[in-house]
Structures are given as C-alpha cells and as structure tokens.
Length: 171
Image 1 (spheres, rainbow, N blue to C red):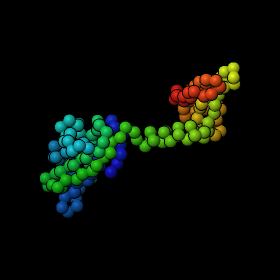
Image 2 (image 1 turned 45 degrees about the vertical axis):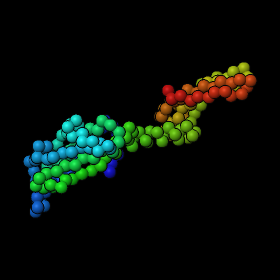
Image 3 (image 1 turned 60 degrees about the vertical axis):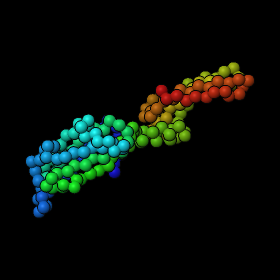
Image 4 (image 1 turned 120 degrees about the vertical axis):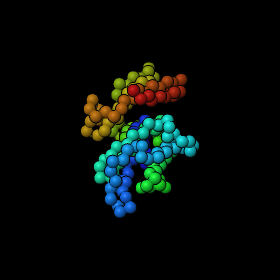
C-alpha cells in the first residue's frame, strides 16, 4: 500500500504475460476492466479519468488522479491474462512525504534548533511585546538572510506586568 497526496496523479505499473511468461504487447485501456473504489466501497470508475500507457516489453502504466481523501483501491481485470484481477490499495492524504519533511523542519526550528529572534519591541515595563522568529536549515546561516525555512511574527500582551496573551504566527 502506498500513500499519495490528493490531486497528485497515481501511477500503477503492471506487467502482462501469457501462460508461457512471454510479454504481451499492444493492449489498450479498452482491453481491461478497470475498477476504482473509494474508502466507502463506492465505484468511482465512471467518474475518475484513467489513462493507460504501454511502456514496452509487456509493461503498462495505469494513471488516475484521486479527488478525495481516504483509502482507494484499483482492480484491473483482463479476460485472458488475469481474469481474477490485479489490485492495489492507495491511501490518499492531504499531504505527502515532502510536506511531512517540511513540517518536521518547522517543528525542529520552533523547538529552537537553528532559531533566531530579532526585531524585538518592549513596553515601558521591559516586557517584550513583538518580535520575529526565523528558523534556518543550517547553523551557519542563523541570523543571516540565507537559508530561512520560515519566519514568524510574535505578539504578546500584558496586564499588571503579567503575560495575558502570546501568539506566534507563520508569515
């Protein structure tokens, strides 16, 4: 099972061979019964556009783009070569591994790895009311305009010298 991001094209590669394990070429989408199901078991085959590419040497690629989050299943049947079907499950999320990597970098930065605070403003009591946080991809760049992962605006308010609110907003 794979995980893909919603809206990204799903690529399902498969091979077709005859009973003697010889590659079968020259097939097109019309030669297959393609079923695509969502996580509720609903058949989306008629509403999801599919495409088939012949890669050569009996190898093929089925392509389609999911439009909802959840577990998707694809089943291909061919009456001669695989009448019982070939299938795979795909988990569709609103993020992918690249997004997760970016999130982890931001989490590390906000736990003060390669972290820099500047543009500080203080009230008459010495309480910091605003500042900027920048997080960096490497320690050499900290405090410079280079390799910034993200910047955040910080705002704080006080009553009787006691912190009331504190917010950190991604810029």
